[in-house]
Image (cartoon, rainbow, N blue to C red; front, side, top):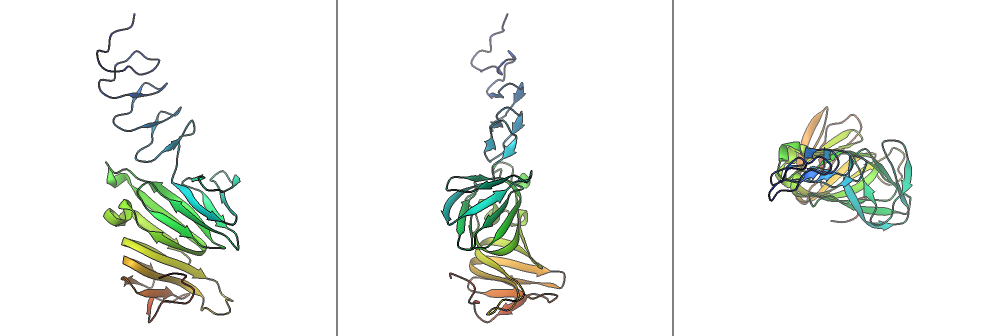
Length: 238
């Protein structure tokens, strides 16, 4: 016989009461007050899970001009379109005439410039448990503009952008980063950063530099970060 569970709903397929919580379907595991990932028995935290995989979605492509693709952690390639999801471990690449914008659950957004490569190393957002939240990116090539969400504004220690010969941390910020390769005709090679609002910290093994709104800086190869007198021409918007 099946025991009554009063006003609570039992865990599907188990007959076990879950008091006021709903269990994760088919697992017998109490999901607490957050959603489980379908078919896995794993909790999704503050983000959305991909049903039946246990993989957490990091962000959604909200705008796309030209062609862009992503390569996942299993080295599977897929073309991106508006509405595509990207996950931790994905490497996103834009074409020479393309750009893409990505929105994240905490309200952050990234605009990826043409001919750019961005790796989403880690993303987890749990507003109820901020200590478990993190946002780690690597700009391998090209440039981007980043606008902080709740994670970057309220938990800046959990955010980091690595770029060629530079590391960027934020303090509630709208900023841009561009990596210029050696051989560029009109711009000195290095990693450039410029801030629209808030502050960022540029650093490498030789030093660090804090930039505020309206300021710009760069890191040359094997040099400490240096502040620039004006925004470099390679920055597309101010």
